[in-house]
Image 1 (cartoon, one colour):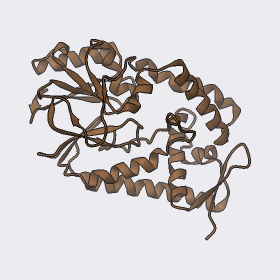
Image 2 (cartoon, one colour):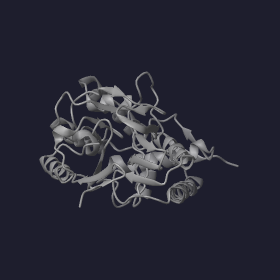
Image 3 (cartoon, helix red, strand yellow):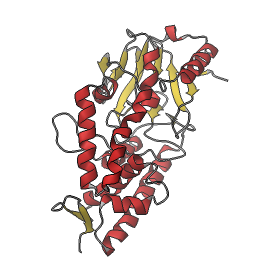
Image 4 (tube, rainbow, N blue to C red):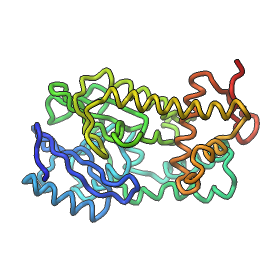
Length: 322
């Protein structure tokens, strides 16, 4: 049964992705607000309308949408809403929501370069154009306005923006400090650790972001906030925030130390490490497993544990000798 709790209602709609259902949140305020929207499928639209109806609402009652991040399972359904509906989010949503031919070409160019640096065999290059296939469930529109760290949210008194990059460069959460409610998107999930996904360099930069390092910093940030309850993008609500954050950071460190042990024995490419970390799924989920693999290597490099030999086309990672 869908209902209001302290002015927030949790709606759950299906997605076509392995992650399963996604949560969308309605918030009562000066403006009736939806946080995230769901994927662009007719099934998701019908389920969303049905759950809004249980709240006594229709899509026409929604006065604005706030995006936690740009991924299609969170933003795609915006195309079912009127074009004039205000949509707010971090400015880094824009290149994904309102995709240009230049951005899509830059996306592919980035991965062709990355595949060479990662030592990925030529036969896998055919996968690169397919990395954008999830965008068929994405929307095509622009933000009305942008939100950044510390901003108040139009029409939602008491809610504040917290930037939490890592899973996506555009990722934000919303906190209401009076009761510690945090709407966190995919930043902290109860059942899995969100993948720190690779993205092309930001405008004006030639270097790719390092999402695992961002993700860890964003997790540590949560521990400094007065959070009593996390409403996540997927899965169950979270109350033991600090305990779960420590668990996620500890598990990530342990996985990185396993990679370090391999690199103490021999120098390896990203692809070689990826195959060891994910022997049964790396071919089926190449993009996700590569993101997770480079995450561990970025982390080890930041610790000063490994170095990179960039002299060959395929970069070689090795342990720093103590």
